[in-house]
Length: 105
Image (cartoon, rainbow, N blue to C red):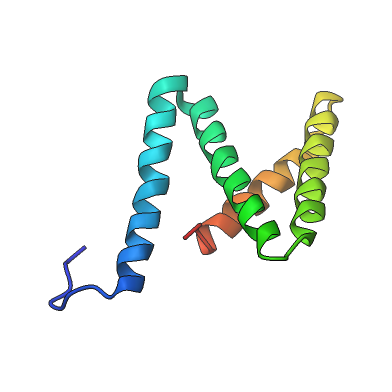
């Protein structure tokens, strides 16, 4: 990626720093805990931070939303363990599509 010919705005710098924080945090977590577990623990840490930030900003429905995501994930794991991988497979496809289209900022 080429560098802009003008200095970055504070918003651009902030977005770049946030993205670097995610990438560097994930790399450190993978180095410490291994690929899959490190990645998962990194995103859980970031999510916890955002949950508190959202709730503090008065958007307390974030807790219900998080609980629903967890219930969905648990349901998908349980269905897969019972021999029916459809919910798990659909969840994985949906998650890949959404995060590819709207990566965390």
